[in-house]
Length: 169
Length: 315
Image 1 (cartoon, helix red, strand yellow):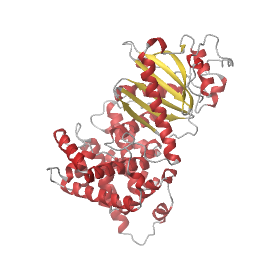
Image 2 (cartoon, each protein chain N blue to C red):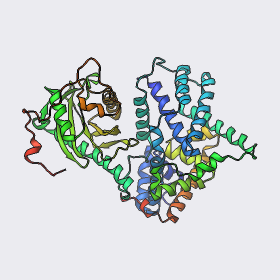
Image 3 (cartoon, chains in turn green, purple):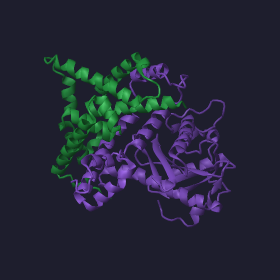
Image 4 (cartoon, one colour):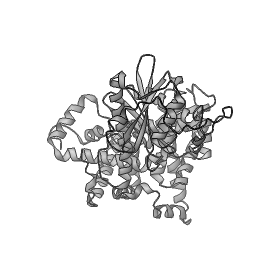
């Protein structure tokens, strides 16, 4: 098995998970990944072999997302039924548990810049430097967003009386 | 907070596995003395675990057609690509990618989870984890003494497979792992929380043993799979079709992943000599050149099942 092939596959799986967590809607997430990969293919020659492939891919995805948000904001008249719907529809049965629902809600309540940092670090396991590179912000900003995001989620989960979250071990 | 010269950033880095190794001990000491900080670290970890629980299922979903296609294109276009050839076993690669993402997850994910609560969903997951734990224990136990390692040898694999299939209540077979240098030496049936399980034992040239534990979960949950490390024994487990698999061995996770790939591919391909009832297994495509073997209903005469004489518990 090609090492590069598996590495690429791992990163793309990671992109897909991140896109889903960010957008919460399957088809929007796949579209975002698709557009990011289209751009990656077009710019493949700008990638320097031996440098950080993961950060390169996440950076492209982030830029595409920022552009999408911007172009959506410039057309405020269009009512995005899908996104409203996706907020209303509980996506999957894994949300049966209260703490999962609360986590989802807490995630939704975060400002997007904090949500991105939390997901990139806690879900995708990116290094802080990679997050800084991806989002184009200083590492100090990454750390403060991470800290605020975690405390906000923590307060939410604690408020919801989610004592079960306290782990036995 | 900084009474012991540990910063807030360092607490995050500790949770995320990004702390400089030489600071680790400082942070751990601080956490031992400061229950509030310890609780924060624990809560942050729990958040990561919840995020994984919510979104890891995406890893098992097939990507959309265009995304698949672009992945292939990108693979061909990227400098540093050492293999632009045909890409085999896509579903395996997806699973390997998923396992790596879960293994690689710092602090969170499936690795660090203790008993959280007892909702049905959790119970189901725990059942699979318990299955993996049982597989690990069984590996430890039955590799410790060569005299008792198998109930029935692999001299007659059809006999072995049909006997174990009968025990498990599903069609199971010992995959051919010759490609990764492992030879099937036999198997045994064991009681598990999921009902009877089948343990297949393999050995390589260096006399190292790997066991594959197969069981039938009561309800299939194909999104769940994972990795555990218990002392020196690594275990990769997953659900495929109607069966749960746990592969255990004393080896690195990379090596074990390679064996898991061979298991996965061979299970997909199906047994070399399929028996009629095996057609109800998911995606089974029996080879055309082999006539179906008549199914044997009675246990083979040569079996002297040890577990029958002192059945530990009725499963």
